[in-house]
Amino acid sequence: MAIIKSPGVGLSDATPADVTSAAGAPGTASEASRGDHRHSAAGLATADQIAPLLDNTEITTTAVTPGTLPANNGNGVSIDPQGTTVAIAHDVTPFFRAYAFGSGGFGSTATAVPTSATAGRGVSVHPDGDFIAVAYDSGDHLSVFPWDGSSLGTEVLPAASPIGSTSRDCAFSPDGTFVASAEGDGGPLIYPWNGTALGTPIAPTTTATNIQSVQFSSDGNQLIVGLTATPFVQVYPFDGVTLSPAVVPSSLPPSTVQDAAFSPDGSFAAVVFGSATGVMGQIYSFENGTFGSVITTIPRTILNANGEAVTWSKSGQFVIIGQGEGGGSVSLRIIPFDGTALGPETQVDVAGGNSTGNDVAITDDGRNLAVAIGGASPYLRVYELSRDLGI
Image (cartoon, rainbow, N blue to C red; front, side, top):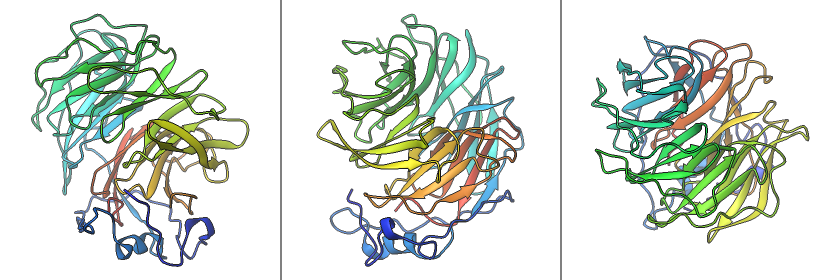
């Protein structure tokens, strides 16, 4: 998908009058109005659709909080593309919780204690919303639960023993036929998933250590991995059978990459990290399976604490970042991106104080943004956005 600029307005020279920042405030649930997602014949957003993203209309947020809260700090969050299921992984037993979600906010909720695991680290809702994968700190490392919108089915475990000491993240492939696990000391691993069982895991010829995060590209042909040690980020080509040797950028991130994500069209890769240099993240170009140059950095003037999580709107027009402790009351940033530069961000206070935005996920229509919160109750919120980010 091409990035289309509004006529006469580029984010590289945008002013606050072009894109106005707005601090979101907790409120009550309201029915989200779904946007019109018609596209041009080429499948690209039209200029009149892009223009409102760059005008002086604020992005405002309405916070929706579940009636039954997660048990503790939210570490990972996921929402299916249609916005019908939200799942969160958290620190203490039962380690994760699933919720039905819709225009009325949170609905039915359920949880289940895994057979052998401690501390939920990551979670992924199947693209169809009917299964939930959970990554754990120890024990089985990964399991999948069927979900019917109100109750969880029997836990499905991998047939093979886990590798290493932990899994810090997991992700379903876009077609739902694979689950990637961020095996901290011997991965990544990709498990085939047929709806009833996890198959024999696929490992790269050269495994990595210190894996922090995993995410597929939108076509499922690349797996991007964040690492706690050099090279800090790498991409494994994946053909459904083999994980090929990883590719790394020529200009490495300066420190631990907490999270990494491809843009929807696969032409950019965003990474976030903590750094003493004043740069808290960066966006690379990515083409033909290879990292290009750093298109733009994410400076401390935009992200004033460690980057903890990153995702993109379906349009590729916005980068959404959760930030760590030290950023004051702002734990979430929604930042316009025009393919060359970042625009003024919308700032959201998710829980006050030094709460952290530990993970973020957004629906395909760009109207519902889920956040896993650390350091303060309610540990989970979904924000209904006043403007459609899913063009």
